[in-house]
Image (cartoon, rainbow, N blue to C red; front, side, top):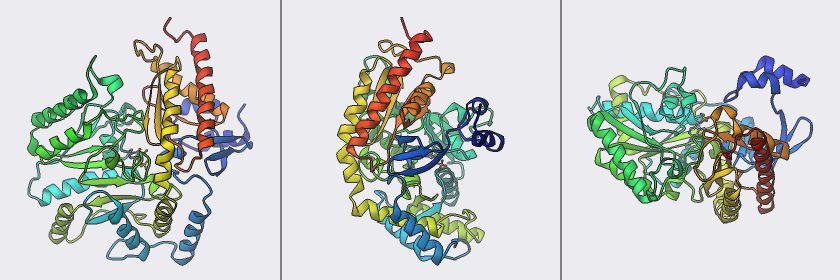
Length: 460
Ligand SMILES: Cc1ncc(COP(=O)(O)O)c(C=O)c1O
């Protein structure tokens, strides 16, 4: 029997990334409030939010400084836009700040409200740039199988996960996918990480050659894949991929929507993984998710092309009503101030070794094939047979079951493609909370194992 609130929910809402048929039986978990890394449901039960919302609430819940920054800006100027030559001080200041901290050449910053809009804009900018540069055939964009870049028609086309494509008639033409850099699943027997990386780079070069280098415009990648299963690329991967992009004059975009702002240790994921893209997409932790805001860096070469197109067409015909929203921008500015003042990235990096050692200890669990991660993000891949790495039948939703047990144990987690349970807590999580989170996750894995055994899902 669903509660009154749950019944109202299923009769009124379409939930993203949810089995809508199953939801009608189970009802949703209704969250009421949050403080620090803790969330409380409408019956008062406490949970550690091991996913920082959706990889985004870096400063945790209930940060009064962010609340005050939003309230003050809302009182001063509740809305202003950047269309038609209008501007406001907060957007200018935030753009200046971002230009200072990004590890790429950024002539300008373009604001929007979500990661999908940021990546969608990247695709449009690349098209515009190559038209302005007089090479209208150079338009195809390469991303990776299992990559995740959002859900608009273009960003879902960039994504390399089947549920984003099936029955949406995607990907659109001109979106190509190259190999997934997951050593555990995709390397050949005995292949070293370095050799695997070389093979993936060669595969990318072959794809570009096959399509015609004059038709391939850009390559986009998350430094560490998030939604695809928390996949840390093999050693030397990005150096080799960057060399291929340089060889074919392919514009390289780092999707920092999850990895940006200290998640992997340094401020940006491309710094952690040692590559220098032409542009980056940011969102989520830019405002610690207190309000929606996202940004794209625009290098001088691209900006010059936007100028040329403006001269030709009379306007730059792109932009979102809420791009650079003053209240969101004020919260982002305060977030960046807190990151710097409290040395949040350094503190998170100092907690990472303990986090990673507890994560990897779960790798010894009989249900876990691989426990992987970097910084304060991890993925726990569940398998039916550790030795052969045999996966479970996806229809048995084993990771979903583990996440349900975790919820019962008081941890909110998330299951991803390939029966992987993700862990990505707020950067401000304390050491004792890290210990507590992993011990609750361990209990959830024990319960999942017992259930899987009962259901005869494990290899004999
Ligand atoms: C790497 C990456 N890019 C883009 C997106 C899409 O962002 P949004 O959901 O804000 O549109 C996400 C969302 O999780 C993401 O993880």
